[in-house]
Image (cartoon, rainbow, N blue to C red; front, top):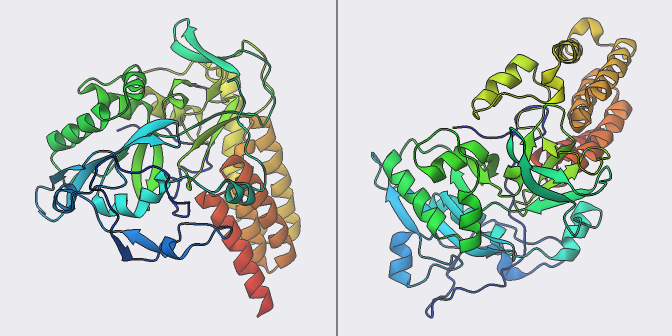
Length: 424
């Protein structure tokens, strides 16, 4: 089962958070109604508090939806299968036909996870979104790219105008989410749920999904998922996420785009790493950027192709790159050694790491480096330097990973704990 990694220093999945507004769409079933039980979710941000948002819905599955004559907020009644050795454990397909006016979404997961994560279907208060992001979210319109055939590589994405560094060229939501750990259930049953997930999507989304690349054989939707999906955490559980247009972007080991993820909305944003000329192919990395060439090629071949990007095409450039990345790893490991636990040695290694990072085009990872360095200074007792690098880590991670990404929140927690500790 192959899952594309995001631009991370380590292959860290995204955490799913529940704090968004109430849904504007109602269930078309004439007897639909909402049943709640008390729980500890916090659905809204501080700008629009509401008492009822401190409650959450009861679990919904095939049996409860039949008994209550309600499957709100899902568009169709969930279809479920039981685990082989545990009749209490179910896996279900849940479908919502109009996620934020963009596309449908089918989620193959347990009723418990669906209940915990159903608030993702609802529209976030735009004032809160700006407040959380600390900037207005602007996606390029019309799209500055075209999907077209690229000789020898099939379909790809080409810039149809000059694109500036930092421009958000695409923001998309997943059409299918599938829980990765399906061991408790029969594989045949899981494929039936996946088939249901596909046919319940709106017609245009289903057609676009079936047109995506597939490389392993077997049931086509399963093959498409394994070829094109990204890792997503839903209620702290690993899922595959299929993003239609994002999946059209080809791989490069030194890409000109990076993608960042919002755990609040499940949106995947694709952003220009640097300035891009008209006619240039747009690329992202399917693997963690810090890997050596042999490691990257091993992962990429599992997707059914050999990488021929500019870095891999030149043996000399690839060897130079490997030496730089090996040196970066060595310098990071040295920061943990007692003999280098002094300001002079630490600052020397920081300068070398940043220099190598810039030469390798790994700016998307620099926030993770800063977080490591902040921890080193904290252990050294230099709280001022720890705070300085902690703040730089937050700034970089907000930009490259996402304003609500798990890594960003971890960096903010570090600063909060550092402040609390200094007050004792």
